[in-house]
Image (tube, rainbow, N blue to C red; front, side, top):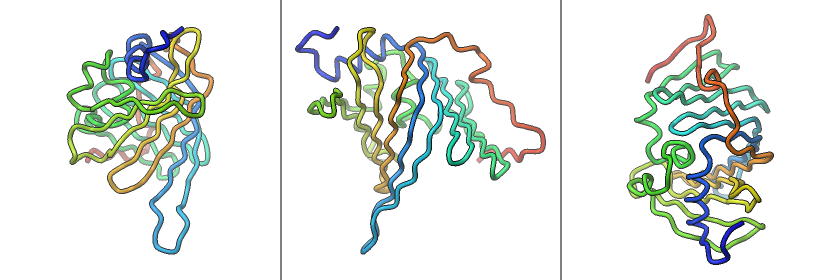
Length: 201
């Protein structure tokens, strides 16, 4: 278990060090900024998340629409089944100050301090919280709140609460987190299905 005086930043550092790979179910709620006289609109989706350090992750969205997001270490692939298209971007160009980079790009917290400033936040909802603020004010992300749950095996990732520069909020809640599962290499290999448009912006 954790020493009583361990700050939430220490727990995040411990998670980064311990979690070489991980797997969990997720629910994502995206809330758009409210317009005058309107209530904010929220969209909920859910699926499965897997990652392996350094630099590999996979989101399989299952509801309400099927989408796959795969980072293989070189390329970030987004397959939208309904649109019948795949978007491929160079991973190093799009992942610098994103929540995914926070989880997967580096093997320790120190390596992320060029991109983020980390500050502890008060505990709430039974979780320990860290605020990660991008060092560059020009990026798409304004701040990321990381919620960690104390577990016998070490800290577990529970929540990512992301505010972007346009005022949109995206909250990812993870459940059934597995620490360091053995993930087959094929997990992070993406091949565009036949007949699908591949766009490389």
